[in-house]
Image (cartoon, rainbow, N blue to C red):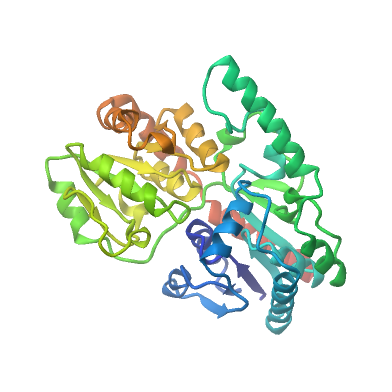
Length: 411
């Protein structure tokens, strides 16, 4: 059978766990090998029993933040220098040849788009629809300017139009990708959108989230893919679930920050609830939280159904999909346009409320949490969404598409 090389950004939690789920769904006769440059979530790969190759050069904290901001469309500057891009493409091409890999499955590890094409093997990209080329080209309102009034909607439409041009038309991709791509015999990547468009773009969405969009031939829906972390549920979750107070899950993924984690914890501390908060990776020694907020490491959130009454989420697709699949209504804060889009999709289904991250320390935030906890309509809508999710398996659908392509390539 064939070797498939998985190239997640290993300091991105959702991306790393999404790759793990796809690798698990492959026929065991295939060999799944992971590579990465940073160490943050490598333990999730090895804990899942996957083969992993550590690669260099890696990034420090400042470069990681800059890369995330660039990926999320929040900044035009990037840490992709000629030296770094050239070195990483060289490392990846060597690894592809060493493994005789027949396909690459990537996330936002942009250099793998160049290295796979240089080695003439297909690139598969399981990806949320928001902030893809297809979504940006067809979306009138990205919600850069929030609000329902005429002035806000007009301002947002203008901002979205400007962003669309910058993202899909302007030659603003880091020059390193043009130079290194040419040096490796690959067509240059000139726009930001081209950096994040693979040969096969596998949309990790529910069908209703794509209503009204024309899906191009190089995009196809596979369905939700979210983390199934291989660790036991902390005993504190069972204890809190048995208490008379409602239990709230505070999930902020890997793209939030310490300030937001502390603000959300203190705001929830003022409510008559218990909170389980896997936010330890954001906190510093000496940080304090209210006594009803119980800080943990990452937990198997896909097992929280039936234990948790509501969630507060940053809006990343992984945390949102986990809440949907487990029937947990939530309040979502949307830290950037992709996350805002996920939360708004759920708000329209009735299983969530959207708030601005700036509102976390204001009454609007606790009022939203209270509504989600007490109004039966949110729980009813969450149950309907959970039933729909039970019929989906994005990881399995992705694996079948990869295997079909491998079979065609072999014949």
